[in-house]
Length: 452
Image (cartoon, rainbow, N blue to C red; front, side, top):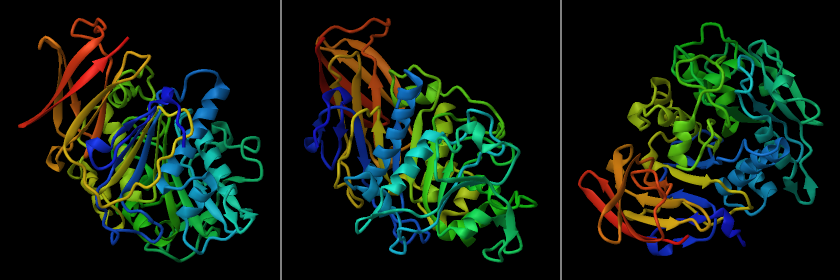
């Protein structure tokens, strides 16, 4: 596939020599995942796509919607290693999927404060993708229901309406006792009971009791909430219909709340997180989409957005008790995860053939982005340095220190952006530079050429 240079796509495989530079950025963290740690719908334990686009909320409203939808299309292609959107969505499901299956999509909006909550354009792209699934020449025509059953909000106020979702049922659901699951005496949403498959869509947001209100806590809008704050947050995700029917978890984090604030809080300033994803980002929103068939991995990466914004820990040991207690259904350790990043992609992007079970050699590389004042730095570190503070020292051709920057290793393979300014804030001149990475006793360096 031809990819525009202006999008600056960087693909990483096993060795530095295999790297190519074209335009946008794609990362694969290829680590082994334990297939035994999976719910029935967890097709790829530990595999996660994290799509950050600093431009998601810039430009005209129509352009924003187009780009937010595209984030979903790119992410599902990257998650599944398929070449078309329809084939990618179909790949998520077990063989029992048919052209007329019933699919439920949970959106926790009942207590949300606008505009926080899953972005309707992400879900619109999801629905459109489902309708592109092909069954021997027949497109998918099954029932798709978008629902919530908690709180007092009308889903319409968040863009979940007949105009944006023609032919799709968008409902404030009612509950009934169906007698299945660990909480068999509790009522849960009729939409979930009627469906064969569940897609869980949530956002990063806080709760004073748990710290987080992500996909796990979001299912209190599926189940009757009475007396479920406690062990119920684990039970409804690890047994019963939520566990049996979930095929995909989606963290729609265009907007995000802070930890410990409550689901009704307004948008939080996520500029610190955005700059960690791309040093040139200027907005205050999270502008991120996360996809995974693994509920544990999706939850961990959603929490990581919040923790990165506030410089908190995000390793497995830092995760809340409810997530650790549910680890039997997915991967909670980033060292075992297959993390695939997309950064600021604007044209169609897909790099097939990624897989688990590979390793990455420690390295650092740096590339100037032509036509801009930005250098893309990619580095791989040993597993014991994940979550640790690191520094970059940038020297000019004379050996003088130009700038010193700090970062936190986000995974086995991480990235960092330098705005090509020196310690005084001035743009550096064209020429050769050395980028030196320092992480404890680990020191690595790479050369960099900047041409203006």
